[in-house]
Image (cartoon, rainbow over all chains, first blue to last red; front, top):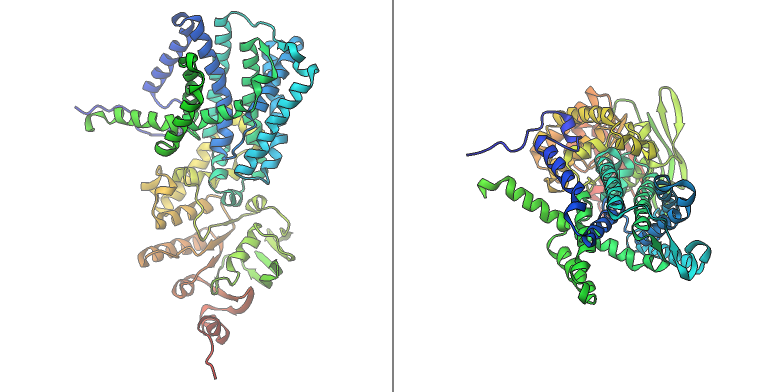
Length: 324
Length: 258
């Protein structure tokens, strides 16, 4: 028996919509229900791990737009995360919670544009080193400026609410930023980003302003990362410069590589891997870098699209099930 | 339509283009021939703005007024109606064919922060439908329907060349620069491609400059031919005259040694 599982495309808008058909809508609704019921299903420990994954995935998506879609390898993530977190910690007393989350994103994106200027000249590994320098600078400034970082005491952030409340806040932002991310990727802006990655010369002859688009990509990605930083501050309730050491950049980069370079869903999968795996090895913390290293090598060798590529293959297998 | 005046392009001491002047008239097909390294593609890159000439001017004649575009950046020249294809095809390999063609329409949709906000709030729906309709027209015209959703990097050379032509056409250009459009194609594919070029020129009224090595191809489509050698224009005129010019024969075959 052959069932017609997917609706055929009958309209140009079918390529534009995020949710293509009824089964996808049902799936989306079910996933949302599961997400909303997470605080009732999991213990406090795992709830906080899931919250961490959710806020981390916002930053990973932002950086994936930059690294995966525009093809600009950057290690400035820790810096942007720190800028977002500290901007939030200082502005929350004046502006309140929700506005200062967006302000943190905006400040981070201003820094993103400034850091983006070298990207107009530098390519590949050279840009990676320049942005790595930015992360180091932010870290050093924070460590040596007690006025911003609160000195040895660290900086405490006012409590937003219970763990479940924080989770729902993060979840709401996650939905907002993932839908926006999907929309951007599907729009002409997102396609221009991919065009720059694939061939800069051809993109320019098509009328894409490379300078503007690269800076825009930096601005969007650091906005995402800044917002994630603000949510991180809410989640941790406490900030100190050591949380934003350059290893944080490398961790986020490995989340992108493992999850899938240039895929929105892969950003979630990558952050699940990067945040959840250390939780399983709490007793053997020394093993975590080794596991990450091995997994990255395996991903690069056998599955360049990362966990997302695996997911696509599994999905295709079940879609074509009777014929396999 | 397009005037190139006394252009000099030097790389160090190599004169890639040496005092090159040419005019493209409205509605004509201009062929450029010449041996490898004679500066044909450099000429395209100068017209296109990828290289900046050391001296000389590039003028564009639009609606009766002349615009100096010598210092205009490449992405802005596209908005004046110059589009091109490349010798070593430069498609966006990771995107499907239809997205490649829609990208050719990106000058007609918003870019920058406004574009981002529009796409986030689904306000670019109309733009998408318009661009898609235009893209589908071109897909119909160039017979690319079977390849609509396949990735550009997976296609064969002949199809990739057609996709690149489609992408250039999607911009609604006034001047089309074709860099060796038929190299590497079979005889049948060549004649099909020439049919398209002729139709683009006649029905859409687009002026075309075409670089080509195949004499048969040039003589069957070009109204006028320019022959180049070592960055200089050595002959100009109708295809028959240029191919019989002793200077052209000398550059290609050489002279008799006495």
